[in-house]
Image (tube, rainbow, N blue to C red; front, side):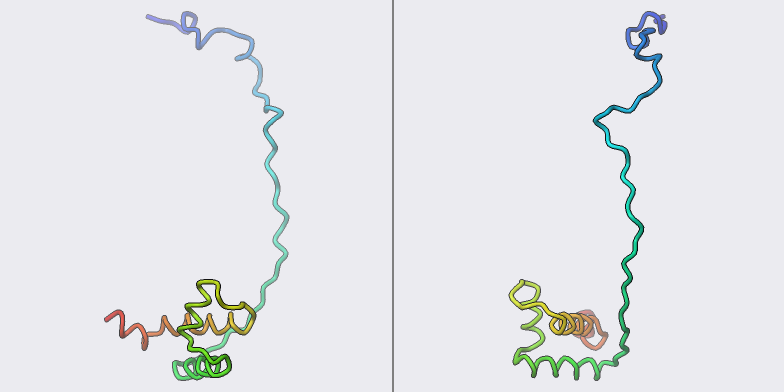
Length: 106
């Protein structure tokens, strides 16, 4: 039978008797600053007709279909500004409406 005295892994070396000390190469945990960013936004409620009307307004203003804008936007080919981001968001909502999903998800 092997005892701890016979096993070199359990020898009575002074290294094992010393209290655990953190290596100097290990950095202490960083503390993150408190979150101070405040986000405010307005919520609009639109029915399907209002949504399609808003999309049509964007299409007329830019001379481009919402589908083509969406394709260009996701491929980085469309200038991003507040107006185009709103257009993108509205079109993304449009794609998720039950009126549109009816054609692709019976």
